[in-house]
Amino acid sequence: MEQIPGPAKERLLHLMRILEQAGEGKISSAGIETLTGWARDTIRKDISWIDGGECGGNKGYDPAVLVPAVRKALGLDRRRKFCVVGLGRLGSAYLNMQGLDFGEFELTAGFDSNVNRVEILKSTVPLYPAYKMAEVITRFGIEIALLCVPSEAARSVADRLVAAGIQGIINFSTAAITVPPEIAVRNVSIADELRGLAIRMKEG
Amino acid sequence: MEQIPGPAKERLLHLMRILEQAGEGKISSAGIETLTGWARDTIRKDISWIDGGECGGNKGYDPAVLVPAVRKALGLDRRRKFCVVGLGRLGSAYLNMQGLDFGEFELTAGFDSNVNRVEILKSTVPLYPAYKMAEVITRFGIEIALLCVPSEAARSVADRLVAAGIQGIINFSTAAITVPPEIAVRNVSIADELRGLAIRMKEG
Image 1 (tube, rainbow over the protein chains, first blue to last red):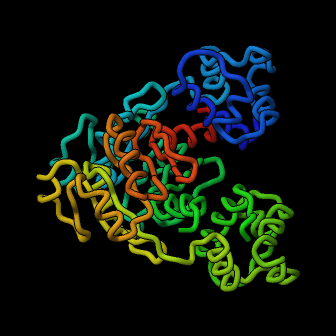
Image 2: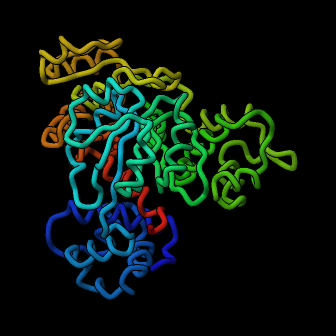
C-alpha cells in the first residue's frame, strides 16, 4: 500500500468523498464512471491498490466497506493537528469555519505577528504571537500550517515553519514558497481557482 | 484548439503559472520536467496542442511567446466578471483580497441575504441584497460566482445562480451542489485541501 501512485491517490481521495456523500447501497464501477468521468478500468485498477479488488465484483462496491479501507490506505485514519498562520481576513475566517471540526484534522492554534490582533480576536482555539510559533508547534506536535500571511511575508514565514518542524503547508498567498522536498505543499489561490474553472467553461 | 483534452488543459494552466513566475530566459522540456514532475514527452505533447511544437526545439521554449499562446488557447485572453455570494467571514475576506485585481477576472458584485450586512460592510465593489441577484448578474454579464453561503443554503442559492444565467460556480461550502452539465463547478473546501496535502505527507 506504500506504492500507490500519486494520481491514483488523488482519484481515491475524490472517490472517498463521493462515496461519503452518496446514500447507502452498493455502487458499481460503471456508476462511479458516471459520477466521475474516469474510465471504469481506471477505477477498478485504483481500487485494486486498496483491497485486491475483492470488495467489488458484480454486485458493486459497498461504501461502508470501501470508505474506511480507502481512508486507511491513504493514511487518513489518524488525527493530525494543524494551525492557521496569519490572522487577517482569510486566516480569521478559517479560525471559526464550519466543517473543520471533523475527525481527521484538529485546529490547534492560530498565529499572527500582530500581538494586538492576537489579543483582540475571538476564537475557540488558542492564539499566539508569531514569535512563539516554533515553541507551540513543537509542544503540540502540529504537523500542518494554513499559510494566510500577506504574499510579501510568505517565504520567510514558510522558512520559519519548516525550521519549526512543520510537515505540510497549504499556501494561500500568491507568492511561491520554496521548501525542502520532504515537506508537502499545496498552493491555493482564488486566481488559480478562477482560471481552473474558466478553462472548463463554454465560451459565452 | 477546441480539442485540447481536460488533463492537458490542467497541465498547460499549471505550466503557464510556472512560466509566469519564472525569470526570463528560455526553458527546455527537461527543465519543465524538473519543475513539474511531468514526463518531457507529455510536456511536448501538451505544448503541441498550442503551437504545433514550433516555439520549442533545441533552444527551449521562450516564456514571452509561450505564455500568451497558452493563455489564448485556454480561453483566458478575455476578461470575465465574477461575484461573491454570501458575505460571511469567508465571503467578506474575498471581497477585498489582494491579488484579485488582475486582468483575467473582474470582481463586479457581492450579494448577501442579510440586508443589514450588505449596508454595513465596507467594500470597493458594489454590494446587493440577494433578491437582486438575477437582475444584477444579467445587467453586468457576470459569468462566475464564488459561492460562500452556509452549506444548508448552498443548493438553493446555486439553483438561483444557474437560473440567473451564471456559467461557472466555485463552491466553498461543504454541500454538494447539482447543476446542469453545461455549468462548470469547482468544489473548494479546507477539509479537501487538508486531505489532499495529508496524502502526500510522510508518515510522522
